[in-house]
Image 1: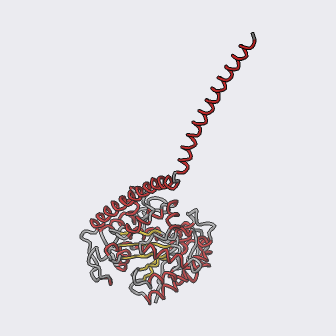
Image 2: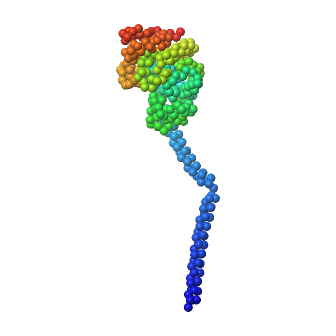
Length: 412
């Protein structure tokens, strides 16, 4: 009775075993197939996949570069037209002022011309913002505003900084921004490096993505027939290297101010106190003496390309003073300049950096704003400098408030 049951159980177990074996075999077949496909993928050239990603990235770069190139070309063409319109009916020197240019092409670097380059050398709070803006009111001018701004609050009198500073000035005067990485990076955080250059800044506001690119700045600068530059961190003796370069043809004005007025003005600037080159009277006046010695030498060596001017003389008679300076620089006393002077020299408007001033009184505020004790301390430190540059001493407190501090000076 039990034998048939046992046989039946064995048959059922055998059938079950076959089913399990078959399932295992099927599973192994599936896994094997997937492994084969995976191995095939692993054997596919990885370099080809990498190239696909690289090609995609490269295409994006090319597209971006093409967009920049297109934008730059658009701005350059637009500015070229603006300059042409600004220069309509401009009276070119044509031999006057020892400048031969007879047409716009003669002055535009982009057309192999040589621009008229005007350079102001001075120190902080000596009237250079006003004079720089006067020059920038001239048609088609490209303004290099304080190009040594990234050196911070120091005066450059010699090495180790002189060589690099002069190189930077030459680069800018030659419209070469390619090696000016530190200058450009500084400007991105301190936009006043560019925003005084109104023609450039107008385009930067419309096209911020290209504003700080040498690929844009180099050709843009090359469009302009006139360049101006004001420098407040470099002493005059070092500027001779620029005058010696015949390819630049630069004309230089040393702008001097009464040290009492300079120091009174610096008191209102939060960046000055605590910086010895800015706040110490003796350093300022030692520089004024050194600048006087250099001015005597440069006047003899470059009589048509160097001049020294006192800020006070320029302020008392702004139209006459500016007209004389423009003749020296080889620039036309254009109606734009006359309009600028008419609107900027008669009333006080704005803060300490404003160029809207009653020019006849602005240089002499120190007589009321400084105590006589402060004035005496400055006069003690600055006696030689004041003598060389023709500034009279205040004898006492009442005299200080009334007297004319301007005497005569001579560089011969």
